[in-house]
Image (cartoon, rainbow, N blue to C red; front, top):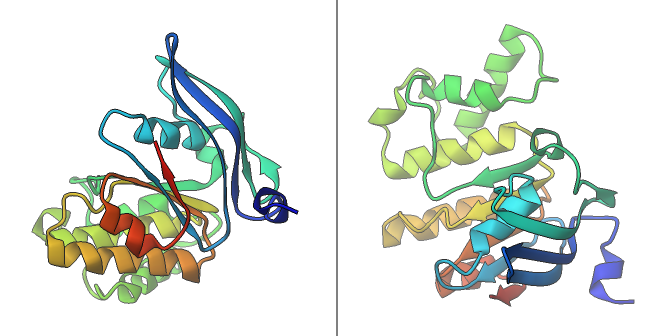
Length: 217
């Protein structure tokens, strides 16, 4: 029994993915990522790493064509709308909303099943305490450090209760000391929440820290 078969009903499975632009094939791969595991896709800029994430997340640009199946915990989500896939994404930029407070940013992503103002605010306060930012709810995101913003971006993704996580070089704009700290934060959260993670990067140190399978494009 091969690896793809053994976790076919758990984690993230990419089956015979083929992505092309016009007549040029950019990506052909199959990959299985177990819950809590971080699989890394490496390659230089322009090779199609982010395009792969777009296909998995359901937001592939019209200029590209994609084939192959995306499965989450045994369920085929290839044709499911992006908002319904419950796949979280962290990009190079934290993309915090500048017109909202830190708490407002987190409330925006909070699982709608958490109902009632008191319960929702308690969930946000708990999330902030969990990332060491207790009491930061009313802060303007512009007043946060780069590391604090990265913490808030991760907390926002986790509050949406994702079933998988896509990482589009989220560490590349951090300084060397902070980069290792945020790597450990993100990978630790993936293990804690048993999330299969697909990381794209050009940095071998990211792949080494991830510790999972590596695919080179």
